[in-house]
Image (tube, rainbow, N blue to C red; front, side, top):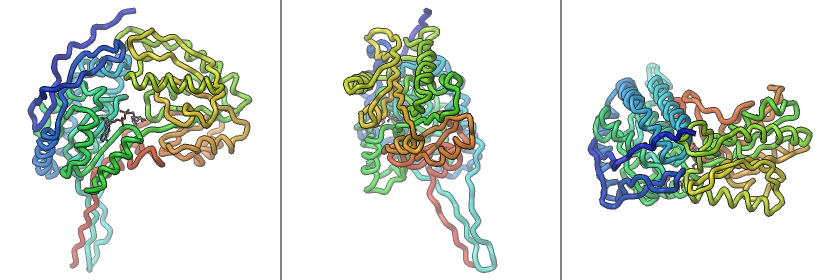
Length: 476
Ligand code: NAD
């Protein structure tokens, strides 16, 4: 197996007001495949937040005065410069996140396509009335400044999913990546300074404390957050004193319900990757699989066949399908969820191979006979573990699928599409897919209901989430 060389990273810097900025204290970033630190990044303090907010406000006065089309031209320059550095950025993503290099490239390419789509959107203006007495227009004004705070599973994609709608809407941003995966985001921030006016997109690195400083700063008007439900709740509370606007993309515990007319062999690979791509570290992955009793044995064996072909290893090695988990606490959590389920009668019907440490590798683990009240059924596992639940009555399966505080995604798998759509209509989620899971595209809103989030990203709806309504009423 060939292992490509790891990137040489010297000292990534933050980007504040168009300038590279460092700090004396730095945070070590660990390569999840080796468990060894490979670089240290700046640790921003309150003074950096204040400087960045002031610069974003200054830049915002010019940025919001540009036309949407002018801002979209800048967005296309963002795409161009990042695409020119695709290999470098992908290599950084693999080094800090762990996913195989090809998957890191796909992550960035998908973010760039997302930006390109946003370069085509129009922000609608609604003419309510225009008669002899009055003209009434509903305009949209940008929310400023946006704090964009991201998680560690897709560092570059999540950053781009926040930058694109905010820039189009007319907002300037301060991006704060996860302290686990700040490196590619910082590098992208440096590159963006070459094509954007100073202060339009700034990147600060730091821990959760930096996130707290940003979300409580009175100069921030909008928080665009991707991360856990617990942090989402804390952010909502911190936003209350100044009524900051929020988009919260939070966790999920997506159910997939398989109906009794499917061919297990035909859908097994799609179900498998719907659950376990990116090592299961996907917000809208299949995290609970409901299967009719009559098909359970055949589907389990078809899933095990797919799992047996998956190679787990270093993301820089050739032929690897799945990397390690991104960090040690996540590895510990996934292990404990599986151990707890086994102690309470669950059966691991497939356990794959994974390299021994020191990296955060976890074998592909397929589990059945998991009680609905166990943490593995109720929490998001966010790892390469797929629990299979059987049902004998479809109404009961729907009820169990909906019995969750989460409501991000869900899916129905069936040969009879009409029947599947009817079941889909009864599932509580921001997106319900039929015969696929998950599927996101820039032209379609994506977001969670219940405690999986607030607001959406994607499509014009996502752009409008970076605006307030401002009504103009002219009496004639
Ligand atoms: P996390 O909530 O621990 O951290 C996310 C970010 O928030 C980090 O940058 C962190 O430093 C920052 N942060 C932490 N506390 C903060 C606070 N009080 N105020 C402001 N910022 C704070 O989440 P994570 O463990 O990095 O990410 C995994 C989670 O993200 C999972 O729950 C996953 O489902 C979710 N996720 C959701 C989506 C989506 O689109 N719905 C996409 C990807 C990941």
